Image (cartoon, rainbow, N blue to C red; front, top):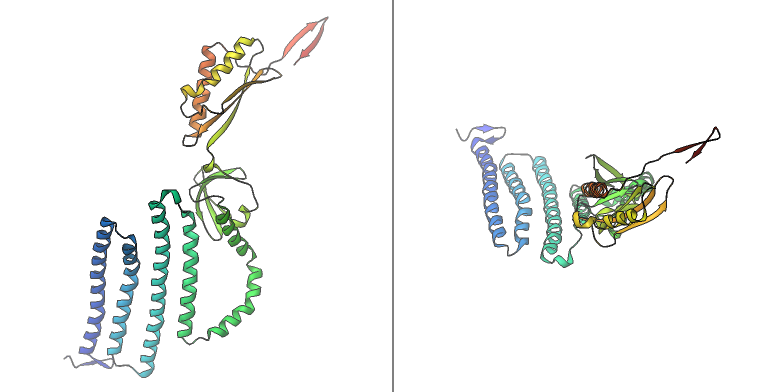
Length: 356
């Protein structure tokens, strides 16, 4: 029965081929279990983070390599023509190159990521800019895969030099058509070099405020306060004014208040003293650089200008609200009246004059 021929090969040969592939899958499963145990052990010991990194990066490419090798051996067991054998060998060699490229890309990008994060964790005084990670990883991936694709094409019999020459001729037309893309790439490089902002920073761009979620090669993603994601091409960011709110030491707030004209000097001075005591009751207001002045005689009010700074970690809107409530409370207790636009009408000799 085992000698029965099916599609040119005996049943015994088919069973051996299937067993080779099945054994490869079982070996991959065992390898995954052992790898997880080793990674957990390394994570607990924390002796060398790069060992765990290498194991994680190697796991899937090695599994694929085992399966490819088992499939190649299994196919070689079967009865095939010389052309079929050549096709199998050729295909497996190309897949091996692709798998090796995948392995190298995973190792390099993971190593760069772990190096930056681990160095920042180890030396807090020399933190590296982790916002560079997405672009660095993508750039390295593109370079590694380009090399791998060239090697695979060369192994497939494609004349790479001829192909590159053809691409060079068409490259001029492509460059002209991709001007905006090139400008976006250069704009992204400018953002990183100048360190205009990083991922996680809150920025104001032409009146639009939001948090930077991603800085890509072509565009930057910003999530606004209404939770919408705005995608801005990088080249536009190099030609506009950007306020990095996250880098401010404190938020400056200018409040303008108006007292009625029947307020005497004592009441105005009392109002200024009450404003200067705001940091004593609202903890998120800086005592330093606080200013309360009698700034001008308005059309219908004695104008007071109150300038204060809110701490960086505080909730800006909640703190402004707390300050306004405190001003309202203290002014009402002190008998200080807020002014509002008024007109006084005088009647004299049956004529009406309006004094604004």
